Length: 152
Image (cartoon, rainbow, N blue to C red; front, side, top):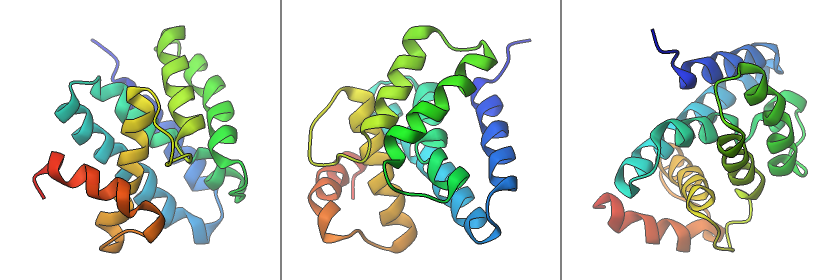
């Protein structure tokens, strides 16, 4: 029986959130799992690996919810994701690199990066738009570029 890699990472994220500050827990579930789902949707549209997309979404703000700190959260989340991914022994070094790079660069929404970097940036913006009913002015341009792809 094949192990579901997304479920393994989702379990690790769930464990972390259960230990997170109570006031951050619900937001963590909504945001991390929501970005993961948005990433899968966009990966399907773009012909990218949906498992890697889901994992990127689940781990992208890991450090913020684990530590309660948002400063350098993208890079910190990438660094914290490395041992989680390696410990599972389910991901190749190349896959771990793709995931960690996307996570490390997801906060720089003004630059254009590789496909999974862009996917994660877009999924993050999309989740905020869906949950909040819109996006900040800072992310409006990126959101407008995503909308036609989704038929909205």
